[in-house]
Picture 1 (spheres, helix red, strand yellow):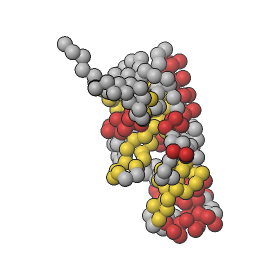
Picture 2 (cartoon, rainbow, N blue to C red):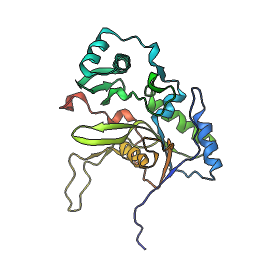
Picture 3 (tube, helix red, strand yellow):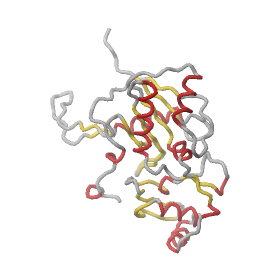
Picture 4 (tube, rainbow, N blue to C red):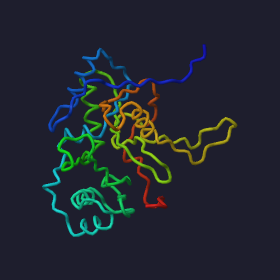
Length: 255
């Protein structure tokens, strides 16, 4: 029989509410064992950026935030809480777009997103709490991958995902902000199409596609599945980092 390409996706059940300082590697390993799940070489572990950020202590109390003059001005223009705006500006290198109810920035990690990835959903503390993205998601992904390799004796790729909107499209998708053990971008230039024509510009946002596939299971509301395993995906190609996905400013017509 012809082998048809396929892959499978599994949510890891039982992940508790993460607290600062928690050992995510041990928690994930314990939950996989408790669910009688197994690992296979070449699996991809996708983790929500929120549980990484929580473990790293990136939760902020707005009561402790003093807005700057710039934050007050941007808050007046956008109608947002000045304390939230202050955190957004601290996490960004520039403001891309702003209007009533909208603040789009270039994050310090290089990508462009709404509110510098700052989030207030699914964290304790109500409206006075906010959580920032992990400090260095590529490093966090690499450390988890190394820990899995030591514990399992096999290579498991790791992606740290976040949710982003997109210009000209409605709705959010999962994107990779941390990558270890797999290509972030696959360069298909030079490959032939079905008719033998060489591809000239095609680059595949491979890690983003992995993150979006996982988001079909982890969700964004009360699903409670921040850790997903994808199995059966071809990981060939030079391993990369999430930073590879950032478009060079000289090539960005909309920033």
